[in-house]
Amino acid sequence: KNIMKRAAVFFIGVISATLIFTMSVEAYRERFFEAIKTFLEDSVLYSYFSDEKEISFKNSEPTYVPAGYIELERIESDISLIIIYENDLGEQIVWEQKLVVDGGSMVLDSEYDSQETREIDGAIAYVYLYSDGYVMAYYEHNEYVYLITADRLGSEELFQLIDSMLN
Image 1 (cartoon, rainbow, N blue to C red):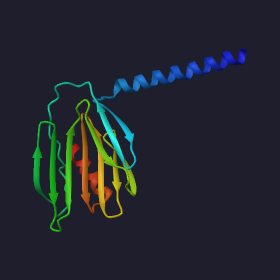
Image 2 (image 1 turned 90 degrees about the horizontal axis):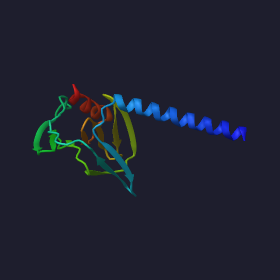
Image 3 (image 1 turned 120 degrees about the vertical axis):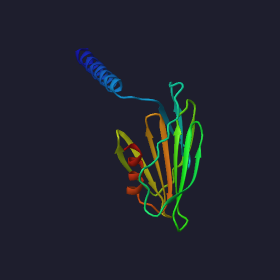
Image 4 (image 1 turned 30 degrees about the vertical axis):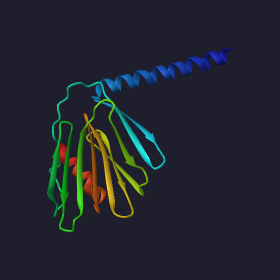
């Protein structure tokens, strides 16, 4: 009985400490939305949930674009910005910024060949690389989700694109 009591007290202490630590960390962090990842056969479904109301969309675009790329097209709406850049070879970079709305979702391919991650301004940026040269980056920051796709760029250039829109 004594061993069971001690074990129960120990586990209650561990759970209490974990809850207190989690609550104190959350209190100091701004969190605009929650994202739930659901893994499907060959893709990942991101489902977004937010309590934020009446957020106005503010464009965040990269100040760095790799040499040789020029802006080809810009598509703006109340909740998104898409910029398409292209070089002389016809290779494109597509920059997408989306305001997270409650109940929103996004599906991404999960059959990439390799993945790289980097912390940028307190959030993790993911770069997915494919053997044919296609690359894709996914980044959540404040109330936005960023998706960048490109032909034949390296992960460092995608990380630099993301970092440049914050500075």
